[in-house]
Length: 217
Ligand code: SAH
Image (tube, rainbow, N blue to C red; front, side, top):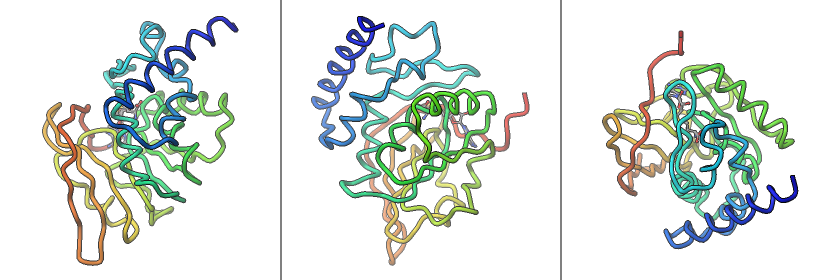
């Protein structure tokens, strides 16, 4: 047990070094990569790759995002500030959610596949994270009951910027979202200003698609 924790610790440190080389500078984000146990969120066949800087398969054809992307999206979302209320769309494994939970006051997260959400909840419980509110629903609709949000992070790709999300974003709030067609998208940082939406292209990315409606399998 102790030996294994040491191995994970070494791998986490190595991953942090790689992210620093890729331009992640927010010390709070790097600390989360160093301490949140990604190995608890990956599925068993990929356990040994938990701290590789790559996306990995989850059940139901979904993926746990690449650590660099998780770190970069989080850094863009925070922009060096402290946020109170953040909405995440696409919980998946719950790893990105756990990182956010340690950095903002309250995280709301929406996932359309119930079994994934139930597994993620178990992991948060084990990590004693009690500032996460989750629901199984279509994330295109956001979470109106808790709007407005200071920040939003979408971890599946939309073909266009979902209007409900924009409506639920607070003034000066930031939305980090991949937009484009299947597996070839642009990561956008959208800021809601008094003059309207300000869009900033960040980098090309490859996410699973944001699906419409609930999972009915
Ligand atoms: N952040 C997650 C990424 C998971 S992949 C992680 O690192 O583990 C994207 C997730 O978005 C999948 O779990 C998928 O089921 C979910 N998703 C896709 N369309 C959705 C929608 N309309 N509403 C909510 N979740 C959605």
